[in-house]
Image (cartoon, rainbow, N blue to C red):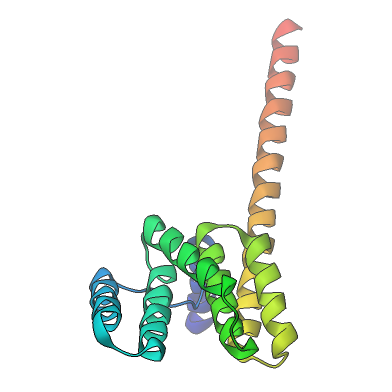
Length: 167
């Protein structure tokens, strides 16, 4: 019985905290990736430079800082402008979806995940992100309905109280 109650409270906690399974990235990792990009730009091969930019983009969209996420989104969108093999584009599109999810643009994130799944329908990472997005949209809808119902209840209660005072 105790484990059932614990699971119940854990599920409530994750419902309100938005507990997704997408990893976060610390600022020190981002700084290391920035150093790596600078080093690659100064002398490494073009492939090495592209790989280090992808690592930096990954770190940025997984950051807790909104400005880092926006920077990662901008980098990924710019890199998508150049032609790449579909599998590389798939990775960039997936990271863009993560970035948009983190900024709260769930519809754009879902569109991008769908594009990933067109390239590789059984990609578990993209399928997990799609489920996370859909869960978040559903949760936000439930919270929105709850807020609306509360507001309607308060207004109706206020009207009822005002009418009761008049009598």
